[in-house]
Image (cartoon, rainbow, N blue to C red):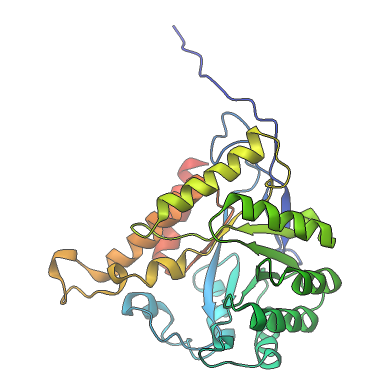
Length: 313
């Protein structure tokens, strides 16, 4: 006797968003069911992975994370090209760490010049991410938007304090927006409303709910993302029906569990394998919570996630 599978009928749908230009532009979102619940609805676009690139040599990466990129860390253009040609990156996330006022404090003009060089050197979509310093990010991302006019970059983080100026630049110069809020469903909804009131089209917005890795608050981030998807799909909340981006690489590789060597604590095992698994396990949890774009670092972690997504699709 065949037992019928109980199915949920969803009334909402996640909006689609196109990132990049040309034949390798990518579309994310569009789900009409919970993540990978394709027996209940459609998931027309599998989540995408952006490989992380820094605009200056990283200072605190553990050896395992640095190893695949040792020969290119001094040149973000070469780094981005290696991610695409060697590791098959479908998207690049350029982290503008050098613009941090508490660090190198690189000027907006110089940072924008680097972004343009990277954008012109690759044929896949480019995400450009600041340092979450409202004043500096506003200056930098507005300049980036102008210098890279029409390239349809995804720029962020765009937060409540910076949304007007960066949002206006994104509209004027034709870019998409990463709307970032600190792990709160109501704040995420509020920022989406503010961007909509500003005139930002719904198909140009992706939400960054702020996430963390395993052992550092992942369960809270998961819960907030889960509630976002429930509201969007089952409660017809159109102010939360947006794709989600998760910047998980920096959250996992900065932890002591990823950095501690086997010599310092033999009980923790091989440091490289530990870091790769920490990133991939955290990323997989976020995919199940509703992530549409993952920003990841290690090629082996990305390989594992691609294999798991293929099994679930």
